[in-house]
Length: 109
View 1 (cartoon, rainbow, N blue to C red):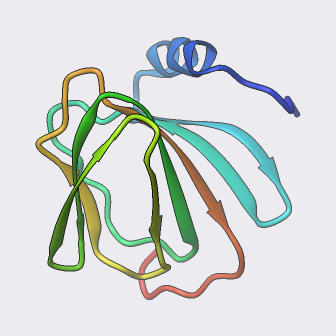
View 2 (cartoon, helix red, strand yellow):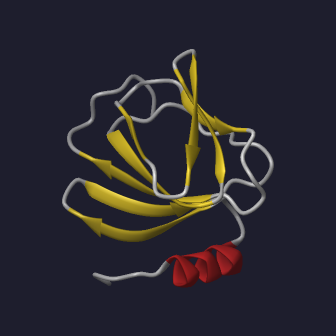
View 3 (tube, rainbow, N blue to C red):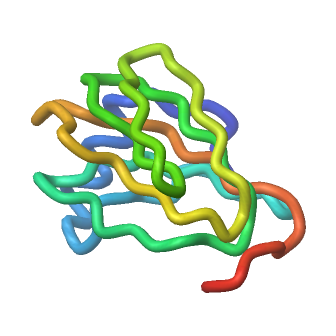
């Protein structure tokens, strides 16, 4: 397992895979870290684990259970397990690290 990955390396892998808008870059125990770069629409659903987003490029709006909050490069966003969320109105270059961790606690896979 790699212990260091740059956004550029992750984007390259994502473009090679090209099936989903995310690429798993690290896993250890209950932690999974992904590079996530949605294209035009973020179609993600709720998750069973808590997650942290670290915005690494671009800007947009995070929708969290009815609330919309602007976000940009450098921002950190927390979403608890089972909460409805997605990114909206994001720039074409938008990308974020996503860190899933902890026990399953949400309602949907």
